[in-house]
Length: 150
Image (cartoon, rainbow, N blue to C red; front, side, top):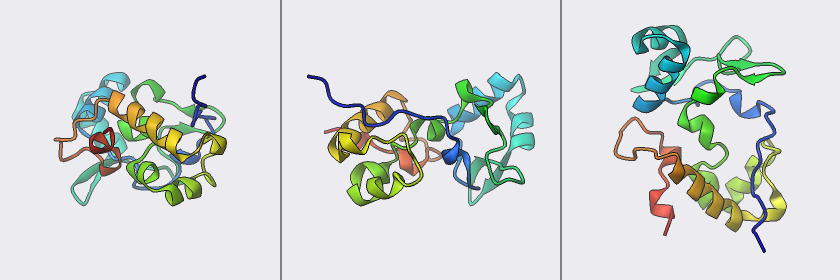
């Protein structure tokens, strides 16, 4: 008998809202620039900002990611940063059952019935498959899950 799927994205865009959360590591910047057909520096000057030593995507006046389109979702979906790919499998939600409970208010794609243990197992495997370079100081802390795989 297979384990119940703990998360299925509903493409609601809730995770695309809020300034400051979309941090890009080196490989994210290269992937996005290539997708947009721009040199990396030009992509950064148009769509990113540096705050507290981190490079992140800017938001529009509506406080959503600059690449979010109402009714359509992410306009750069194939090239979205790893932090976007990993949601809601962030470290805090994987290690803390209370955080997992709380995030379900905003993320309707989480299957409560699957339980936190299944969410953790599936989430750690998913984030590890993203091949986040945890030695990269620019890699978001939320994606540092290698120590959770044991």
